[in-house]
Image (tube, rainbow, N blue to C red; front, side):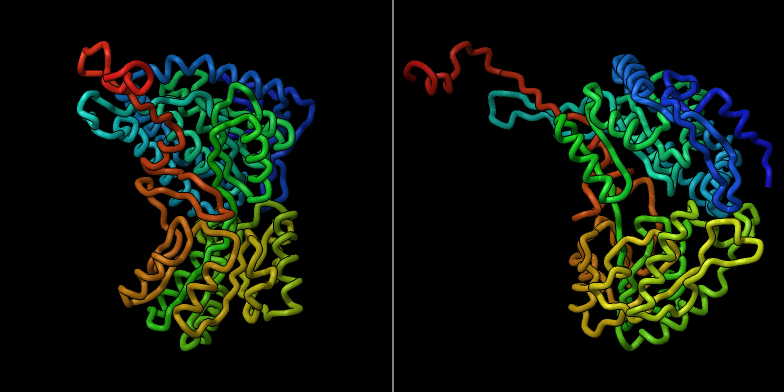
Length: 504
């Protein structure tokens, strides 16, 4: 498939977007964007260095007074235009997202791009609805009210699994609240983040409000997080890297938002609709080739349904079609790289010593051998404390374990360091409600797994981080809450002054 967009021409001026213009990086280090389906280089560029980060932060700082001073209606209008520009370029965004990530084009077309357009439209409206307590005379003598104010320049870091959506999740709430931002996308998938910033400029969002620096984490990323003019950091990625981000951010007393790893449990009670659970498990485990921190990775199935569930999932996984991401019939694309494919394969190979690989567990040959493909894989018989159950694999691998009592199922679901997402499958309202209360995760689906909506928050418990993306709750991250209090008495000597000097 070729939709006509020429990536090399589109980004001929470089992979840094600073002050409304593309420019080349200054690190002296080159990098290639590789199509993981073929191993072919689609774009080569120079990485950002610390000077580029400084320039981007300076552009954001210069743009902040004007953008934060705009009325909510003015910001909303600009963001509505932004959504319209994105919608008009939907085919280009889908093509480039699949090109750099290896996503099946049907996923990019039906999930990544429309979700991003919807998110932009949501935050265009949300810009006019910042909430606070009603003004009131809480002590009788003063009127109090709450202001929500933009906090300044935000420095955010986004991952490679959903480059377009993660750019939107970082940028949109920040700018809707009146902040300006410097985003560092993953250096292996920067293209749609750059296109997103370009689309914002086309829509009339002022230069400097959105800036993109494409560089390595150790250089550009750490410099951005530690920059003295950056007042907040939002990071999505692995828990290990998140810890490093937190160290740097807290050393400079920055506000911090972390969305980290996940190991989502998929709990099937014995009264569940088995067919629905089987379909949900395969879809939830294989979305984006399993490279999703909310993907279903641990299926706990109550013993009466366990054997039928294992058989059903294995049979359905074997029908999943691997192939060219641009073929509309392709169900599963490659992993992001051969290194990631080998990492996933390593988990499965080590598990063979203590568990059973029911289906999959190998890379395909033939026409797909040049790509970073791996077959959908189901593993059974692993112990709860084993590596494949406890560690985030980030690939098309589902582990299934049995349980006997409801207490045991919920206990096992909570028995990892992570708490980003989970699902519970039951026809019993009370059973399902108990699971939603007791499973420690930022999102718990009932009789489904994966759907996300702009109106609802996304974020985790425990080692999955803290803070929320999407929804109006995200403004808790991106606004400063200020209490304003007016005296209403016009009395010079207040009664409370006697506690400091004099008598009543």
